[in-house]
Length: 206
Image (cartoon, rainbow, N blue to C red; front, side, top):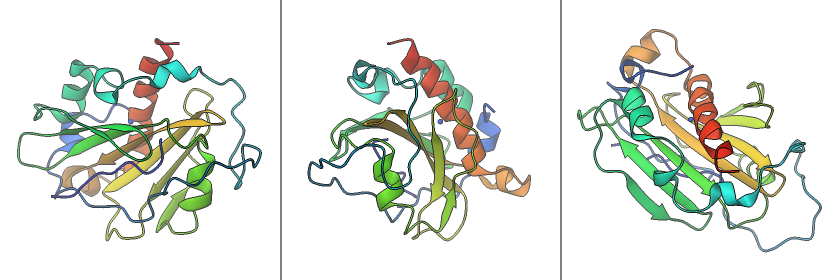
């Protein structure tokens, strides 16, 4: 199975038919590693500035309890296994996997430990990404970027990162299935749609 990973601390509602039939989860190379505390002014690395920052409290706790509702997860994936919560070097993550055996899924991560926001992705991931997508429309006015990791062999999995403050971001790693690929769907565009849903839920916590 492919493994969706948090790529920065940092998900069009893609229905379950777009996400199922995925061939698996794949590890994405180029994951930013937490850097030592820096005095460099944010944003940096070519990242855009966040004009209307959200408070840090919107990223409190696990994404399993705040990023997506149960109905929203079901709308994207159909029936799922129990959500898998982890605490990583970048911040907490939650992984939802389809229970149909398709290996389709969504991973949401909150970057709460680096203090570098979306700048970390620009500095550490952009030089290594196999596909860098910086022409995604901002999610509700917040800077947004997508990428496909250097270690992947296809475009089924895309990571979308949204900066909600100069020092805070969240990410959505989305795997799509064969039907979506055959229909010409783009994982980064669909991932942006899921990220939009997540941001609406986060704003409700502000």
